[in-house]
Length: 313
Image (tube, rainbow, N blue to C red; front, side):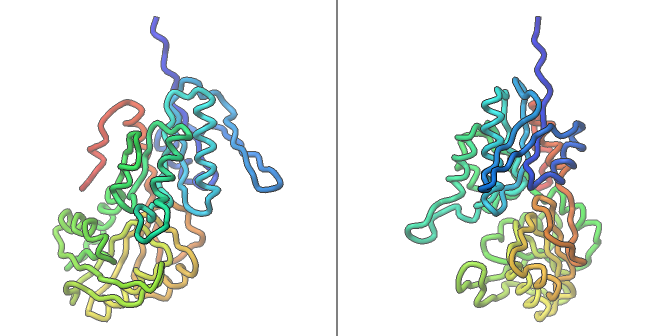
């Protein structure tokens, strides 16, 4: 007699509780019960309060700073593995430390690879993530990686705006591939910003490659941290004759005085996903949920179906 396969189970890391609830609802099942105990020195211990033996376990959690968020994900993966889960899928809407994907100067770590190895060592058998800072980070894993693109979320919204003379822009040379992909799909022009930095998160000079006169510009990037690049780019483009400047960024890190910069900038709108919860509200920031995209991919992974239909470009 065939032994029935246990149904999948979905659990949330504490930092992504709200997003995980949306994903579980779109998946069609409740979140599993997990309790985290805290010691007085800051150490913590997650505990699954239900059996996961033989199940495919999905653990949802973005690993944005501080490092406790990554540690919580690792501990939950390890707990699921030791509780005899059949598969452990780490769902990381935002994959932290991705900007450290190479040695850009002597004696520095390649943190993205280290994090990849830590996730695998903890027991992850599959990774689902979205808009990695560098596509080649997938190669740091020996396990399957489903790399999703927030364009599936953003493109329908951009089309709904019905912007005339639309131009897609990249805030730096490294994002030109992403900008060209959007422009091809939307049949629009492309401009590129060339920037020079004094140090990390500090721009000393910016130039614009292309014409934005009389155009409605949409800047495209994978993340917004201090918002220095986006707000500087918006100022330059408005000075060069743009009609409006919007920005779409998958991951809203928004550290330091980023919210203040955005409020005082010439950006008309910043459109982000909920891969990272916002620290505060802003009239200029619009949040589009990625929950349906992630849930659909989880369903397909669970039923061993292709996910290629979830990519719009």
